[in-house]
Image (cartoon, rainbow, N blue to C red; front, side):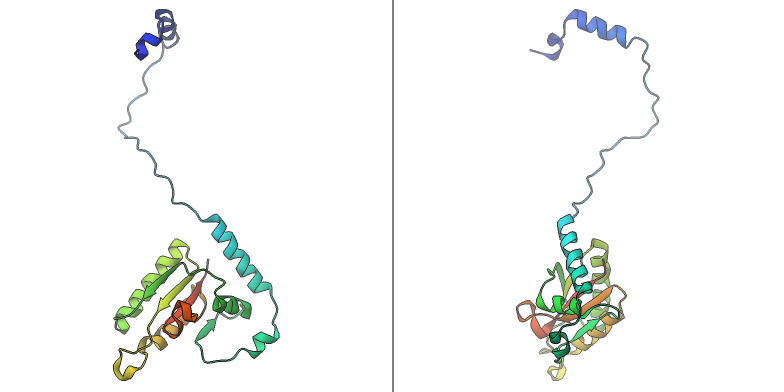
Length: 181
């Protein structure tokens, strides 16, 4: 059965009468195209991270904060609570992406780090890992990038804090970095 057969002659006549004085719209020469859907927005992840940051900023100093010592690399932007660094160190923030600088020289590593951070901020990533390595393949087995990366990160305005990664996340060969929202 075709669509034409579904309508009676009376229905077709009534439709023609109803649209008898209708005129076609003028053609503007524009092609209409279907708009792509925007990328998904991780609402719950954003809410969880905002709450973790709020808790970190609101918490006071504890005895453990005063007793924390060690030579692990860390950085905390002035004005932020030490709780931010503690939560970052404990793995409370989920690492969303990473950059591996193995095999790059200083110049390449600095450019790669700058591009990576800009990309992360643009995508809304808050917690990232930067793998600088332990320097075992370097001259004199000294970690060249480790010191440089710490310095470069501290200079970046979008970096709120960083600390040495937990052993499961790379230990002394990586940093976990918290970025501004």
